[in-house]
Image (tube, rainbow, N blue to C red):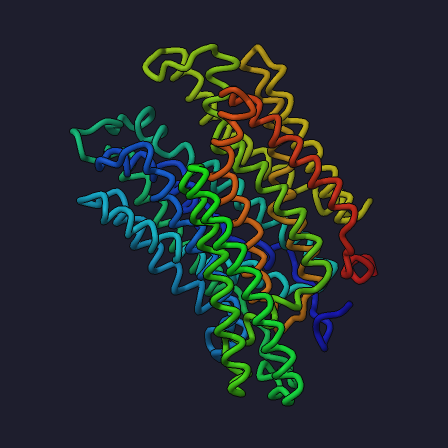
Length: 504
């Protein structure tokens, strides 16, 4: 289906480059955050067992910020700044400041607070970038647009992952510091990341123009009739009761069973979601159906069919990814290097190998992203994504059978191919199924299906590891591989409504 009244012109390669260039800096900031935040927290005195709680800032911030930013960016238009670019600029400024502040935090509580600000800033910038592709590109170019973003994501993550090592080994910047002080190599890495974040995002802001709103574009839907108000108020109440009840029962079970207390975050999220529906119902009953919260709740419960189908694919995909990110170091050091002694030479060799592998698969993803649009044209977007996910799943499972560490690079080739597709194909498919005037909001909501499996994986994998897998972390990677293959199979069920237009 077509999401715009007028056909958008095709953009040339340089225009595609400029509109995506900001993702290079965004991903450098994101990669520095992922790779070094735990190190900073521990340096400032955090207990290892509490790290996951501090890290919850990232998924919780994403859940809250992205739909709100998407909703309001859909309704923004400034003649000189456009629709999405004001949010790019705001996120670039606050994000760069947070990246500079993070390694200079004087206390743990300050660092945790800066993490919230930094993650919120990244979300403010990143979410409109996803909608940007749908705004500016015709359907047949969206796969290439998201693939270009994947390319910059891969390059940004690769460079940022190696920055501390480059400063320490090439420039002889100290990689150690007194107790409670962040090493200079980490500080300088964050400074480079801050500069790149600001420069690349502002490059996109000043080199890319947005289309003004369509003549008939109207975000203020007509007020509901009384029978509609009654219907939606009742629906919101029922759904709210379902979420609230499920959250309460789940949290009670976690408390009684004495399972990992982090699971309360999931229960609390369900309860909060239920309360939001109750508020939406109350506003609807009072006739305030044009309020932002009512729009957000209503649109969430009327998601396009394609988006619901993709949500299931995303859930199993990101469950697999978080399994890999959390447990690969432990799995590789114990299963391949044969040690669990964190002070041993073998363990640190294995941990260094994993760090290089993670940087490497991002580089592989950058290369794979170049080929994805061509493969999608020869097959289809969902078949391309299915093949990439199955290859990635096989890559994860293959680690179980490896004894020579150098063979792990073959496993990461599979993961890198999957990663390139994960960052592009679902968004290309989604953009063809959602209304143009709600592009930002639905791209933000789509983040839910990344964050929810993140919270679930962080909460339940420890339980699975100890009760089902006997502490063998390599089996978590196998589980992740199976989950990724399953997501690939489920991708074949997705209705890609924009495929026919893309092929036209």
